Length: 354
Image 1 (tube, helix red, strand yellow):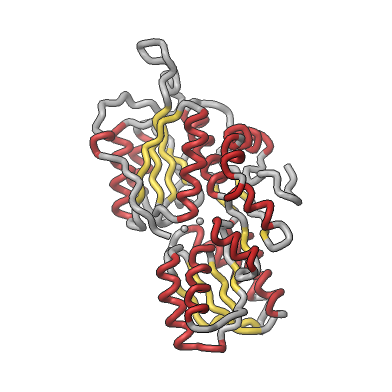
Image 2: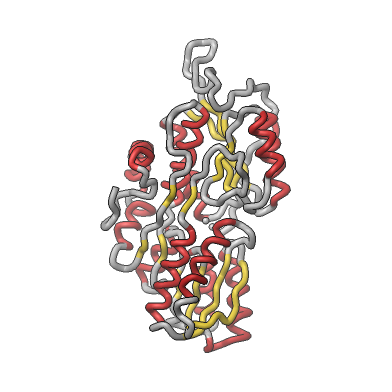
């Protein structure tokens, strides 16, 4: 469920185009236009921020969209709930066929989901949940399990004893809540591991640098490990530790972004959980498109993150970095196959099963 980049624009001019409202079950959705050509689905996407994870996810969605005659309208909320609400309002007014949202907060966007449903436009949260019964689908990672597995890696590394700090995602976002729950589940089984401090760095590397510097100043050598709810924040902690002359402090993350995988390969991270945004967000878009066209699909598939250590990191790097173009070329078919089998995280890594 992530370093800030510039807004991927969805211009108001584009939204102001006169559109016919094509929603779930509309016979014209994905049909033919007046010239006899295939009319693309128009799907609006609003993400919490253009993090490393979302940037990779956008590439996956763009690839799936190109292969399936889908026009994507993209926007980032820059971690602002009100901005995201306005973006969804604009999508509803534009009469898009479906809306994919990676929400800033779980308890948000209620009026927008209601308005979209009334207009026949399905809303599908992906990667981060919305606490709303009116969403049309829900494509989520098992963040509790990911939090449990990263904390277990740290517990094993520390031998069940030591002091840690925890870097959290945006407070109130489902990914933060669920990953924290997973971490606490394992901490409850390891009473000799103590949390010196925990706080949000909003999935962002630069914020984590500053947070970690403060903790190093306050706790010094008492810090025996860093549990980060995503790779970007873990990388920020790594930078702060190196600048302070601290080496060998184990760090664990989640997401499996390029820099995170390289940190596992080098030994700077003890591991990460692979949440390949390219694969997960492609699946979310595929579910949204099928709902919009009235096709049969599992509307609530779960993304189960595989654990990445030095034993299998090279294979993960191929899909995320070194053989990425070849991976993207087969992504649309992989996405379709995964929806049929139910394992939307499958990408052929060693140990993965359909």
